[in-house]
Amino acid sequence: MAIFRNKRDQRGIVLRPMHAFGRRPSACQTVLQAPDVSQIHALVRWNRLAWEIVDQSRNGTTLNGERLPSGRWTVLPPGAEIQLGLGEESAWIAEDLAPPATCLFPSDGQGWPVALSLRENLLPDAQQPEVNVYFLEGQWVLEHIDGIDQLGDGAMVRTSGSTWEFVLCDDLESTAENQIASVSPPPVEVALHFNVSQNEEHTSLSLVTDGKSVSLGERIHHYTLVTLARVRSQDAQRGLAPQSQGWIALDELSRMLGVEPSYVNIQIFRAKHQILNALPTHSADAPLVERRRGDVRFGNYPFLIEGGARS
Image (cartoon, rainbow, N blue to C red; front, side, top):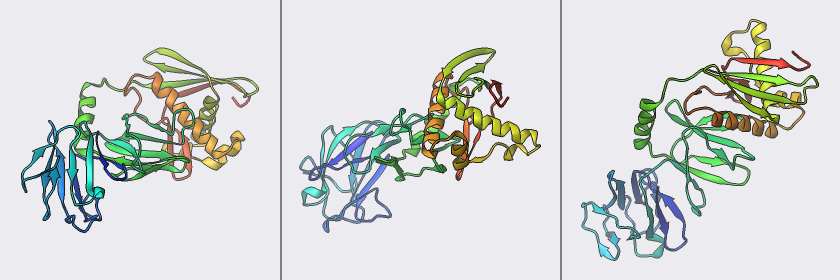
């Protein structure tokens, strides 16, 4: 991920594969307000070997003090200083010139990007997750307590303590996804086997894949999954259509479990995190817990519940 940092205020930006600097918000990824900056002042692009810059302005662009020839692409050297206007607010230092990559970057421009895994990115961390960012069916999505939203370039991802800008490098994503798909084995069916104590206070979980069982031990979040699985099972027994089975309002689920909705949300993320990390890559592509606005349900996985007072 290439990072330019402003010379005056040290605000950082992450470069898109084609990145425009100038005064026109509708055309530029980085908008500059100085009056001597053109509507589209300069372009920076990744040519799949290096970053290069071209001047498009009336007043000129300098690279390390030398004025760039108008209309000619020039490769950026490490640590390059680019001047897009007369003042320091229009001067940028090439702090990093790594290839472009989809990432999250602190919205205040301070700090460093967060590289994104295609499968899971729990924020602010895996211990107290509030949201999850991942790649699903050709689209980056944000999963949060109220549902799942698609992420576009420049979207803000917020938790209780931080805000990140989503930086989409979509010209590279299709290549990355195709490479993964071409080498991945066919999905393996996964079944979840729960064992619940008679007093409903302890729940253990085992994953069964390809005839082999893997124990995930006893966790609090397993009981959240059991509760969702029971709701789906009850709906199936009532004869509801598969697309309607198992949906329950998060508020109602939290009342059933006797905890706050935010805590239920954390338990769902923890359960998905543990199970994803216990499985081979792409062995289970379907969501473990599905969401729609304000509702959740157990995903379309075979399951078995043994023991428990409600069996």
